[in-house]
Amino acid sequence: MKEASAGTLESGDILIQIAPAQKGLEIELQSSVAAQFGRQIKTVIKDTLEGLGVDNAYVKAVDKGALDCTIRARVTAAAVRATGKDVWKD
Image (cartoon, rainbow, N blue to C red; front, top):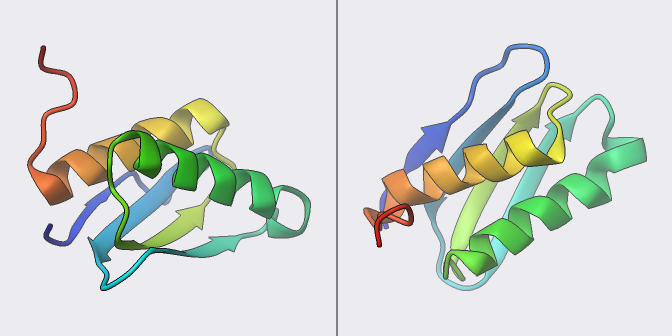
């Protein structure tokens, strides 16, 4: 795994930066709505990575009001870039 990112800092989006980690998933979240939705955002990130087989990663997420579908898309794109594994290929 190498460092990679996906997303923007535009309103309604989320910037996901992913890097290798020694053990487990560590998620750092910056969001103006973290008090209300932080747990949900982290769960979507964690579940998406685990579904892709990524068990060891440091993730920095800067949220600008992204919906769950956008979060999943950005996490998937960053993970594909970081691992080189094409999840869209049969």
